[in-house]
Image 1: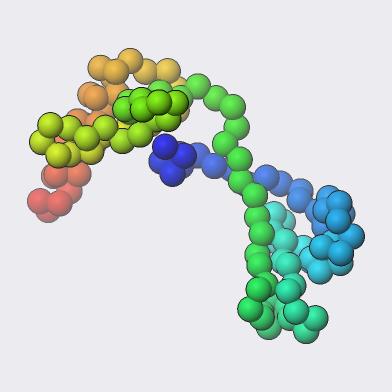
Image 2 (image 1 turned 60 degrees about the vertical axis):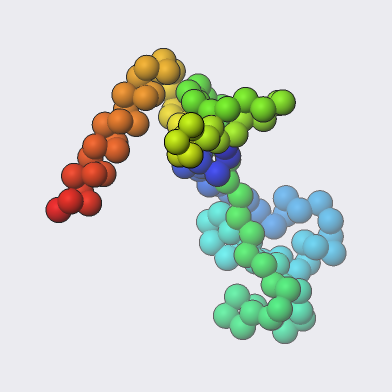
Length: 118
């Protein structure tokens, strides 16, 4: 379900000084507003990367109301497999009834069908 959430936002103002471990902190530089670069090798840099180097950024989905149509299995939401073998998983920000969710999905499918035809 998380893979379907397309409303991630970058976590701003990440600083090297936020890293509590001094050894790690000494191998990290800030590359951009929200990206850190970890150097695995002594001579590596973002312009000369080495195996093991990493670009690190963070994103968050802020608390909000979402509507989901899915299959509940144990304590997890999963894709529902229809009797015809199709898959169904709908997510949308905001509070919507099942009827509204299915209506919007049908409208999106109709639009996609017409787009493909032309």
